[in-house]
View 1: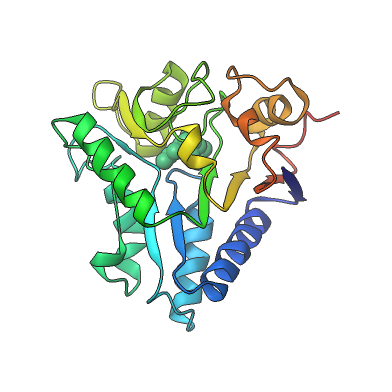
View 2: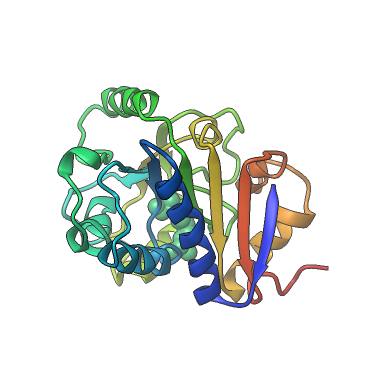
Length: 240
Ligand code: F6R
């Protein structure tokens, strides 16, 4: 795992964008798997600007690593987030976008469908944010490192974060998510984890200085050569 230290959220976003931009430029059929939440907003903004300035994405496939179980158009859904913050702002063909269906009645079927898509479109980049409890995707603490795509139950801290991020009540907040497991995440050619803010400092300390354990899911990346972690000063503030 390669670690890059940056000053702040802006620098983290710029560096993250740069890596994604080069993958888009240098591959014939790039596949970029996104994440949602506060972390990737800056990258999406730069990606939109880059595309408006001429970055060609006509050959690029976009997907996401997870989706909350609930209405497709819910304010918190990954689908709503991606259209609002990226897909509605750029000229991308619907055939180049893949999303997990949070309304799927049969989650096993939906998992089989999405796994088939991933086999067909192997990921060049998997973008990730870090949970305050160390989760990646919805692989919460305790998830075995050999997990494959599954229906995950959120930890309490994750439910609280979703409530804060989307300004919703506990009753409105989703409690389950279909997520790629560690197995699919680590199959991406580059796993790009972005971390910003003091509230992530404990998780960053566990990620870089603690033992490799499912108790801190992100430590699954530590022995993975193709993982890049970009950490800002606030998130790095508890490191020795
Ligand atoms: C969201 C996701 C989550 C977030 C993580 C960090 O699709 O997969 O694992 O990346 O909870 O969230 P933020 O970026 O809001 O701090």
